[in-house]
Length: 142
Image (cartoon, rainbow, N blue to C red; front, side, top):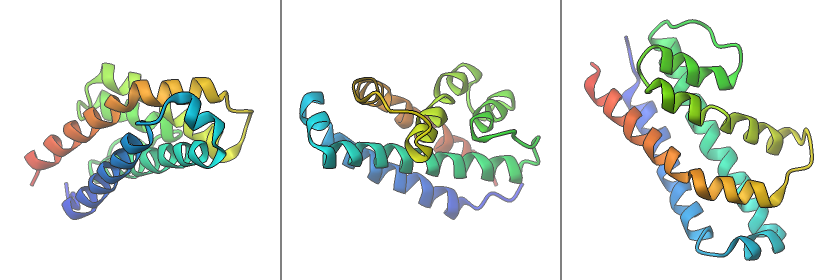
């Protein structure tokens, strides 16, 4: 395995920065965020950026560990879970965030603002858990 620790560390650092921005934004109430399109679109973009960095990390691990090829971005979480990089239950819990990211990026359907803000705010701890798991795993390699 040839983990590019610097690559993974840079990705983790970006996620930490995005989470700090998200926490600043979430000092506002849901109502304040939803009524201000700039703030709402900032929340959308922050979720997209966080998930994009996570997907990059997942794909890097899959490539470097020569794991099975994922069918899509969501399955990268399941593959890491099946291979004990992420706890399987956690991988199953966090994987659907890709669907939310896809709805934002591709505008497949109208995004329910209430549900989006509620879920993002409620599940922000999952991103912090992901950071810790990946950082711990990376530190044990090489």
